[in-house]
Image (cartoon, rainbow, N blue to C red; front, side, top):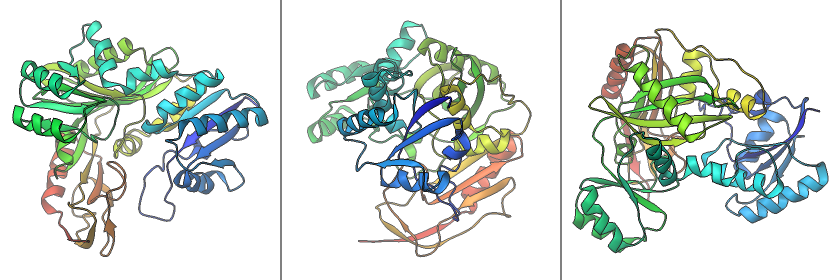
Length: 414
């Protein structure tokens, strides 16, 4: 065999369902189970995903909670004594990148160690590195106490953004409009593990792709958000449009490449967010992972590129040439948030397939389904819609049309 692989998985699969969540991350399609010996560490949901796509006879070990890092690390040691040293540790979830790095460090396994993962998990570390490389970043400060935060806020000005140093999906992120509002937040919660940064007024873009072991970008797609991710938490639809003919496409691509080079990302997928504020690109944040929400599915359906497959290949040391992503076809996605307060029971919703140009896939909740506060931007939302086949302008019009036509009626459950 070519090697011994440990996979950490917390993602389920949804066969025989309208849901497409995680369908591109089917390990049986990504990794040769003949060429490699593959061992899985999963929680209950992750076990269901592996059993469906890799066979019930796969070497699966179930844990109760990935948050118990020492238990997972100790179990890995037992697996090493049983099967031999692991050559690779693969973890696709943002929330497992730190754990995978700890396992590699403990057992001397090749791949990113904690200090390397920090560059893509800790928002203060990534901004420090880019600032040293003379790449534009928002002004920011680490929160150490309520008094320090209130003092630092005067220098940043209002509004400002308060966010966890390590996090994803805009969880825990708040836009603070005044000193009084910040004082109220400080009185109600500890700010350990938080940072504040200046508010940047501009369009937000995301660059998504994969770099090889030398740091060369083998694929990149750039998209423009239709609204800030933070507004999704307050009821605004979220989505983005693949950029193919934007006059600033090359500048955006070059900015993304400069960020990747400064952060020295290698053998990884990436999801990089940045502002275009009056013609100036300003870094927002980066994750060393495949993008969330429905970005990866649109990229797959527009370009025929599975970012999870590319990530697995570069992680295993496979040589891959640049993947073409040119052409004039665009695509996009739209997610309608779940109505709050949750849970909500669906009364009715309006399917839009066949009614909106360029819309090719949708996940509309059925009457009687319950919308709950689980998961990130994917999962069962108020509605999810995928578009492809038109120009940027046509996709933008289609997304606006879908927003205008879609209706969702729910009742609150106690």
